[in-house]
Structure formats: structure tokens, C-alpha cells
Image 1 (cartoon, helix red, strand yellow):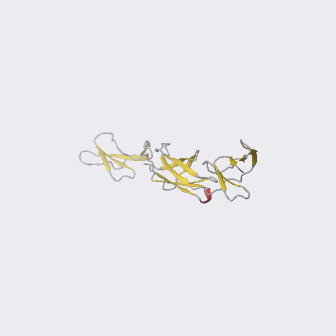
Image 2 (cartoon, rainbow, N blue to C red; image 1 turned 30 degrees about the horizontal axis):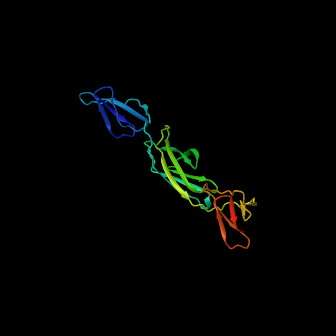
Image 3 (tube, rainbow, N blue to C red; image 1 turned 45 degrees about the vertical axis):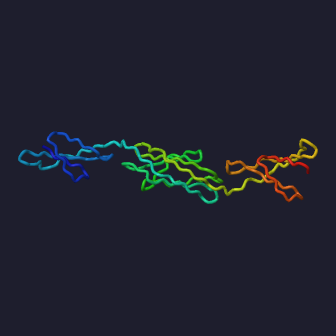
Amino acid sequence: SYEIRIEGDKKIYKSKTTSLTLKKLTAGEHTFQVRAVDKAKNKSEEWSESYTFTVADITVPKAGKVKLTALPGNAGVTISGTGFSDNVGVKSYTVKIDGQEIKDITADANGNLAFTYNKENIAGKIACEVIAYDAAGFASKVAKSTITVKDTTAPSEVIGLTCQPGANEKNIVLSWAAATDNSTDPISYEIRIEGDKKIYKSKTTSLTLKKL
């Protein structure tokens, strides 16, 4: 019969044949040695030469949780990924955020994700997707998260003011060029007329005034 030892394993395996099936070995390199044992329990004086073999990694990483935190001043978003795991270890991440894809973000020493997405004047609902990868290139399922970033950036100054006659002689149409804004949400406008205490409002780039 035979005794088999695996480097790093305190257990001595036994076999009555010249082979041994091992189950659930971790992925990576392993080294084993063998010695013979006769019926009288006499054992080979020395263990055999070592033989090294490699167990392929076929395990897919598991997805964790993603947390988004807005940076001050609408300057961007920090992305934290925790709970992602793999039998060998998470190596890198791919992040999709705000319509952009960032690949090969190196995992930290604990296999977690810590990444800052810098973008000026970011605002509104921001969606993020994260995928973890191991050294063998296997990918986890997608982990998703969203955040609504409060808009603290004012629209641009309005320019291009004009005035045209309305449909009748008592009406006029005020118009202006569209302002720009960091958010994709619609822009509305406030209009004031000299000598009039009222503040008019418009959801378009024009306003019709009657009976001036």
C-alpha cells in the first residue's frame, strides 16, 4: 500500500493502488510525495521525489454590495464595493457609471473596491454597475446601485433677449437663448419686467405678455 502527503496538509492519505483521487483541492499549485508500505508495516526509508501539479480555477467570483457617496460640490461620486469574494481572490473590477465604463480597477488588499469617479457638475439620478474578476478572468454577476445627487450648481446666465409683436397689438412675445445646466432635468425661467413687481415664470424660452 502507499502513503501520500500533500504539502501544507497535515493529513497522510492512504491508497492500496498506485493512484489517489483528491477532491475539493484549492486552485493553484500543489506538491505531493509518496512512500510504500508493506504488509509488515515497513515503510520506505525516504519519501519519493516531489511532484508539483496545478489545480485550475473554475470558480466564478460572487457579487457583493455597492455603495455610492456624492462628493461635495457636485464634483463626482465615490464607489465602494464590499462582500465580493472568490476562492482564490478578487483581482479587479469593471465599473459602469453615468454612461461610462472603467475597466481593470485593481482590488485592494482585502479584495474590495474603492474608486472615485470625478466629474464636474454631476447631478441627478446616477446609476452604477460593478463586476468583479478573478485572476482566471471569471466574472461575477452584476452588482447595482443608484444615488440621487442633489444639484447645487446654478444654470448659466441667460443671454440673447429679444422682443417681438404678439398676435395682436396688445400682446408682445419676449424670448431668449436657452441656458445650460449640469443636470439633464428641464430648465425653467423667471422673468421680471421693469416697474412690475410680479415675477413671471416660463418653462420655455419665451413668454407672451398681454395687455401691457
